[in-house]
Amino acid sequence: MPYKDLRSFLEVLEKEGEITHIPVEVDWKYEIGAITRRALDVLGEKNKALLYEKPKGYEIPIIANVVGNRKRFYKALDMSPDTFNKEWIKRTRRGVEPKIINSGPCKENICLGDKVNLMDFPIPLWNERDAGRYITSPCVITKHPETGEMNCGAYRMMVHDERSTSLNIAPFRHARMHMEKAWAKGESFPIAIAIGVDPSIWIVSVAPFPYGVSEFAMASALRREPVELVKCETIPVEVPATAEIILEGEMPPNVFKEEAPFGEYTGYDGGRVRNPVIEIKAITYRNNPIYQASCVGMPPHEDNTMRCILHEAEILSQLSTQPIRKIHMTEGGCGGYFCIASIKKSYEGEGKQVGLAILGAAPPCRWIKTLIIVDEDIDPFNWTQVEWAMSTRFQPDRDIDVISNIAGPGLDPSRPNIDNDLTSKLLIDATKPLSWKGVRFETKPKKDVLEKVIREWDKYGIS
Image 1 (tube, rainbow, N blue to C red):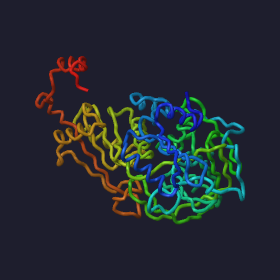
Image 2: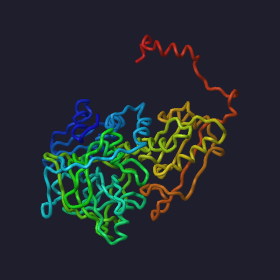
Image 3: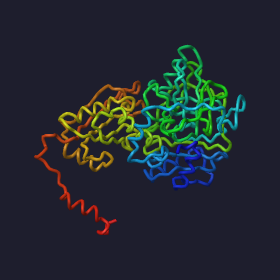
Image 4: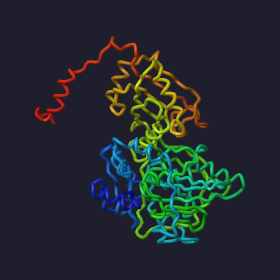
């Protein structure tokens, strides 16, 4: 059963004890960022969504860290950890067209002209060196100016004043491609931002789908029911009908503003850059809106968790013919920089062969900087097992390859030239040579005795 909106998902999380309420007044300036960061650091994968009921100066609550662990992520899509990758691949094979309706809850309040004021919403100032208040959970909605193809992505937005923001979109981002098509004609580019949406929409906005794939069609397929969209008031763009808040705007051609620093997903400040400006023309919102936000910074955090899971799923989807058994984007890997994959190896050199295929799986391959390939008997989610494979099956002079001058993530602080996104990638083949068969044996208990011990485990009194 799909969630109709953010609120229905929060109701489920409430029942399952996955939300922590903060009932006291907290300052949107730094304090909310510090509390959220501390909760993530202390609790790790056991973190909860955080509902700030009284942001200072506002009656609008803030919900942060909505899908900040794997449990809530899978719950958001009504899937289980064991079946997620298979279900993701199955449901996203074919999109389902969203449904356009006449109106929806996001139209309960409409602000136009002088009534437009971003400061009416409790947008946090997150980190000590952040240059300003940042919208960190936006679903940025655009259309190809010629074909009408829709795109929904998640990009940081710095608030400059009551009616303008900037948008951080790299050249390879699909919204940037749409914008540049309009700008090439000398036209302003219409753009909408949805905040506080059905979790399937929030998730697909982060997913690394290929160019031309409609995220709304994918969200509809994942939830097995069409997403309902309504037309904006001032621009020719459709937005989720049940969103908490909608910002409608235009990006005038070649208008940029300096923004940042901002505490990015790598755990380092992103440097000052010139980004295109959005002029906000209208704001619509629900009665008693909830402002959704994400704390970005050093892993773990919500953005990191989503990217890890989605990149794993998309690589498996693109490489279904490869002998990959499991794939793990690690929590410390900034949502995709560090990857471990297990394979069923059938010939010498296959470890590197599969590794190169993974690095070529666009677009998620762009993020990977270190890739370790292990055998299928190694669980890539168990770091001790991976260390053991690295220690006993891997030889540095034989099993390491470095690929230089290849496209990588632009926010990687270690890249040698900050003027471009070129990086190097490390491929480690930690699979055991097939020549070991019948020569080297792993130490294991007697199989039938171990099976008996597992069956009768409770009688040993070991918790």
